[in-house]
Image (cartoon, rainbow, N blue to C red):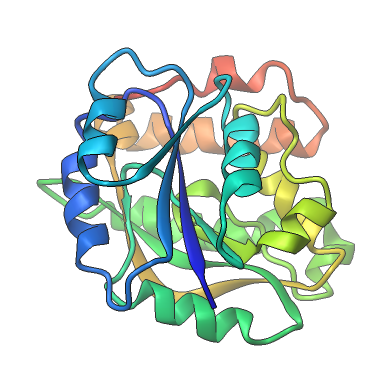
Length: 240
């Protein structure tokens, strides 16, 4: 199966060199790497073109950027990857093997939050636990069906045609768009956390501190579960 990597991007020039190295080492290779830029003012677009990736411009917002990327992708499967998240070398094989099970509609890797100086094991553990307790508390009917609540740093992957069939992400969503798509795709099958590590940057924890970062994660997740959408972006500012 052909696998497209879709990267929703905004001012990511600091993260892209390492991401290029990681994606260049993937074995087997993806069908394509597609960057969806939401209005970068740095060198992100220039760098992505130099790496040989496809470029698409979109209005800003992770929901609409992901939708744009999936719509123009030419692969059968799609991996949505944040620019500061680095998949394992066998990611394409893991995706193909996981989605070979028709009962699985959406899956992801298991993230480890890591920076240049340390691995954030406490927040890593909390993020793993959150995939279980969040649906148990807020969507128990889905939890009973084996659904886990996944997030962007997990490296989520799915079948392109099923994503389009459920209407994709909420195009107005700039935060928690991945949780919305978990709920939508759960109508078509299981949502699974695959026990294969993916590394993601600790830049928010480094900026905010571990306690503040985890408080923000909890607050944003709780408000999303309560149906709040418009205020979430203000509570979850960009860190570059």
